[in-house]
Length: 251
Image (cartoon, rainbow, N blue to C red):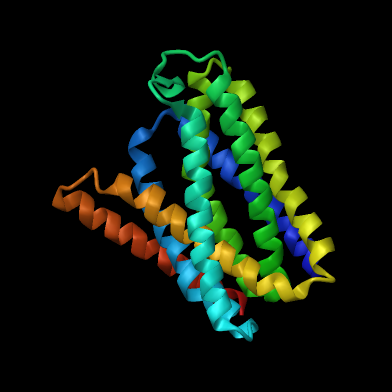
């Protein structure tokens, strides 16, 4: 199957699958399942970044020092971007997140940010597939894994902002379409710019590392009991294992 078809298929099916699962969890309010999804997502993200994406990026580059600098730049960039979102979302003492109802403002902001995030995910998926088929599949799996808990949170924010369940589903569906748009545009553009693929892979890895370490793992530390810790470690290992299995099957 041609690369463009893989990009379209994984971007479309991945977006729909993550949306469907997120809607199922969010609308059924099974909040106890969310920590398990987050633990699994941590493993999938770190496994994809360190075991698949970075080794491939270093194999393709002729300048490892530049690549490591790109990874560092990416982590700092995502920190700054998240800081800007938090500053806009909760500035000074007038914080929309603390209001009982914000008339749709925080929900709209979340959707704008998530649409951009999905667009970038599409670019990263395209770059991975253009480098190697099994790397593309692994990258798509990792992105889908962390999209599910993220979209559950988005659903909750939209409902909190006054949107109906139907509107929340439609907005998330439209936002997930940005992944496909980003993937197709990246495929067309990168045909003549294959030299930037290692840098894009490095940015993909830095994004996954940052999301897992800065956003997801701190939430896991809120549960300190032994049973919860063992469960978290097992699910993180399961996430890593699923990446290894996916990579083996794709070879």
